[in-house]
Image 1: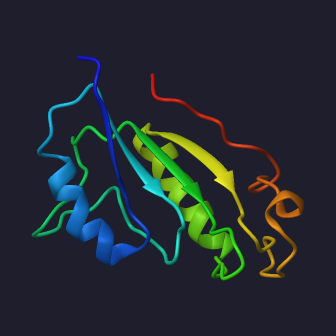
Image 2: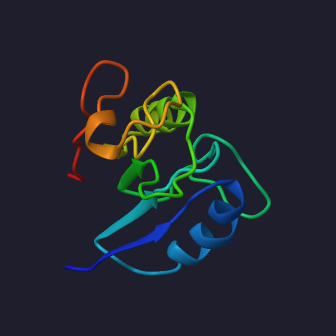
Length: 127
């Protein structure tokens, strides 16, 4: 009743591998850490032979870019699409940071890049 369990999902390959294992665990909150987000990830609203989230309890998605000297850039549309999927499915979404690159892909440093996505911060928590 008090266990929160999550898994890291950097791209679709890891979503397909890790999410089915997460869904086997009985927990009060199941969450995905999509950081660093290294590619688009389709999570909700589809049927798949391996997994799909229709009626499946994922409660929270945390997303962010990579930081550090060898950080790989991300694309704003990957984060926006992930957020839109969460909103449509009623899942809490938290945008942690852009990482080392700005929304337009320029390396500017994590603190300067900030955490504004589509004009605002996203700090949702699971209900």
